Image (cartoon, rainbow, N blue to C red):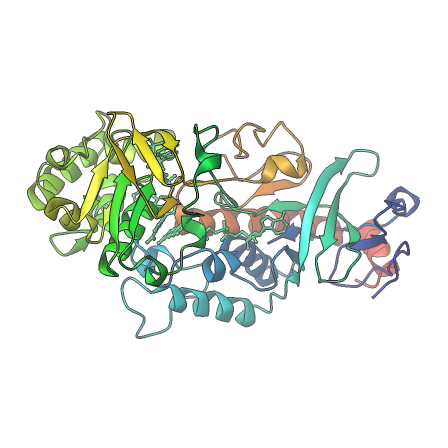
Length: 436
Ligand SMILES: Cc1cc2nc3c(=O)[nH]c(=O)nc-3n(C[C@H](O)[C@H](O)[C@H](O)COP(=O)(O)OP(=O)(O)OC[C@H]3O[C@@H](n4cnc5c(N)ncnc54)[C@H](O)[C@@H]3O)c2cc1C
Ligand SMILES: NC(=O)C1=CN([C@@H]2O[C@H](COP(=O)(O)OP(=O)(O)OC[C@H]3O[C@@H](n4cnc5c(N)ncnc54)[C@H](OP(=O)(O)O)[C@@H]3O)[C@@H](O)[C@H]2O)C=CC1
Ligand SMILES: O=C(O)C(=O)Cc1c[nH]c2ccccc12
């Protein structure tokens, strides 16, 4: 490894790497006539993009802040999680799930699939490299990406990567979202956690637990708590769509995709709601009123994912999961007061309040990515490509299917530029300077 403050020799299959110490004494890439030309990427979206690039003959470097691939799935999901879409909608490009994988893979199977994917395509991310900043340097026409090496050493070293293309694949769910400014929360003495840290119900057995939020995480964690002997109350502060995971033996998601080929989204929504009512009954009766706008229209216009029910609704109907309204304030050391005035003590509060993108915290660019929500400003199918070699993989609000779409398009687009660049005599000359 190069020492701090020194410039590393450009390697063949890597972007130009400039090391610098914490004081920021980075070397100036402008001094080099380097044609540094690769991409930077990290989870399923980063792996898929890197694999697609490789299959097109384009090398890349993947930066990952954690110490393993698929870290969101390994570390920020609960033990009994299953994919809620059938496996055919969760496959990454060029790699079907192994034979024998169930229709809805469990978490460990998905993690093993991602590990195998990285191995099969030879994607070896630089682990423990947290991107702190990235900005386009118009003077040299390259992206400068600064990563903190979080290898555990006392003094964190910074490395600057210079690359022609930058693929942002840090995910729609990069950071837990917590509600702000809830009165009295600082005085609460029970256990407080976010669903991203929830592993199983062991520590909650016999406890009174408040789950705040009723998306797929809130529903599934409430169900898991219930199945493990805890008493769960779930905050529902707004209208929501709950759909059965399957309709007439077909996955609701698969059926929706099929119907959307023939029918407008409004008609598909009407059909979904018709079948949901038949299968689940009137959810409003159980404190879960439906929005006026249909589930797929809602997903496409706001990004809000409908709940695909895997059993929580039955527990809500039976009263084992109690539906409660929004929190007004925390009171005393364990109390919570709700907006309807009722008050109750809880041993623990689990926030199932969703996630947010972390892009605004490190990407110095505001034309393509919004600094408000950290998503590309333009929705799918225009969310994958920005200017100056900037790309976004996995920001379509369409789950892993969106990831595959992005990875293929991005790799195709970069591969075309790559081929063009290296087909020209000047580029070939420059590339031989750097051993490519
Ligand atoms: C609980 C849960 C279940 C889901 N189930 C499904 C499902 O069944 N089907 C489906 O299609 N979709 C599902 N999704 C949605 C989505 O497909 C997944 O979140 C998927 O993991 C997204 O992949 P990603 O690579 O875009 O993001 P992530 O998996 O979050 O990967 C992003 C990676 O970037 C790293 N990173 C972040 N910031 C930095 C930084 N600054 N520097 C370096 N590295 C960084 C992270 O450590 C992480 O490893 C689910 C989401 C959640 C939260
Ligand atoms: N098995 C699987 O595959 C699973 C998949 N997922 C996926 O992971 C992603 C994230 O899901 P999830 O973690 O549920 O996040 P979501 O963003 O989907 O849901 C967050 C929930 O929290 C509520 N909320 C937010 N702030 C507050 C507040 N201050 N008070 C009360 N309620 C609040 C929201 O309500 P409101 O609508 O009123 O804002 C919403 O119900 C989704 O795409 C989901 O589909 C999640 C779990 C399991
Ligand atoms: O799990 C997710 O968050 C997804 O984004 C998958 C998904 C995309 N579109 C949907 C419509 C209904 C249910 C899940 C999804």
